[in-house]
Length: 166
Image (cartoon, rainbow, N blue to C red):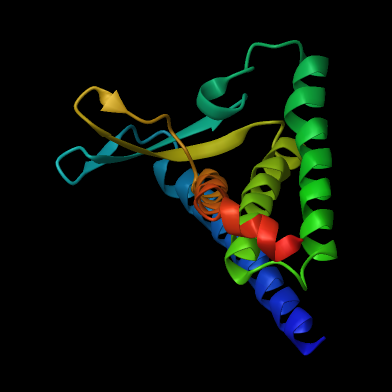
């Protein structure tokens, strides 16, 4: 029982710190990068540029009908994240810490971006870009990094999750 409480505390701490980091960095990016153009670092490997994304990754769905966009980019992800959160909390005593970290990062990243969809006119601030020459990522934010790292953790440790949660 004590281990489950410790896991819940660490899981909650990870989620709240990740959401907090996302909120703070988006605020800093808006304040210091909006309207400033591209700032390049490390021989143009890392760029900072502020954009407000009306769609999903790489503006996917940005031009959809507003009702379709709301259902597919706001309500559906909210339901999925609540289900993932429910699963993680229900199985917290059985899941390994690495799996809880993966779930926590996915949940915090998802809710970080959903916050903007609900409270920023469906616009998600993005401000980071990586690449070499013409091979570049889309522009992303800390929430996107959390989601990506969480998914990578789950993929790498997937085989052991079945044994841990069984």
